[in-house]
Length: 316
Image (cartoon, rainbow, N blue to C red; front, side, top):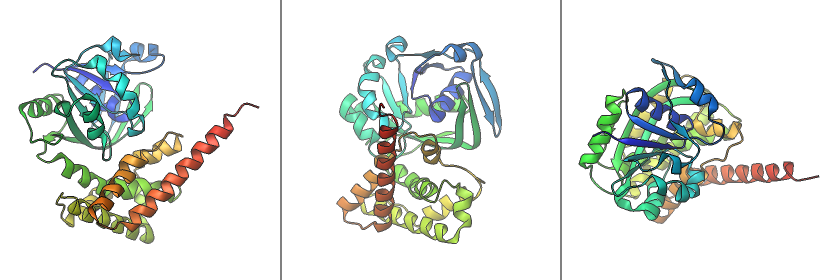
């Protein structure tokens, strides 16, 4: 199948996977706000572990109206910007357009389904370490595979066709039977490492593992997430924590994406990564006291940042 693909959200994740697809010959169109002259002139590059390539013709636009209808839309905006999708997505849709969200946390598929129809929605989980370090460059540090699944359904022919398109373009991609289960599996890592990296003063994964108290907190949070997943009907073995720790030990000094957002003054995906899992755990009747504390601290910190930003921008 020859997909016409739109990328909505051109940060590190959207730019990287879109560039991989474009470099592999897919028909890819990027929504990128602001002055696009540099990207159109220089193209877009990916450097890093095992990769070094440039996409000379980078199809980028200021609006989704300019992109028009596509067969597949990759949603890679932060969950904090979901409200914007209500207006951004409709110009990209035809009757069979599929929406594949690559966002973190829980609740994103439900949001998209409520606005655009559950039958369109797929989810993807990206296991990769990278950063967009300039308008025209993404640096990849480690990993690079993606898993995709249907929202609330078993895989369909289109699921495998999308996975094949990723693989054809050099992206390791697999199809999962139970997308919700894999969402919880990724949260086993995201909840502790993204949260503690911020609250411990802006430290990387290696520093968390090296600190015995933070390591103990990490394992305790992982155990809570696994217990919550099981109570919510998604069966995760306790060994899921060991698997995530082994993976983290190979990352060296990696800064989680949420920490990078925090350092750059961007909004944090607090509700998707910590709030929604906490609410679902509570509804299922499983206590998660450490997650509750983590969520409360991060929410308070973010509110304080927003108040400070409003004060700093107040006219004299």
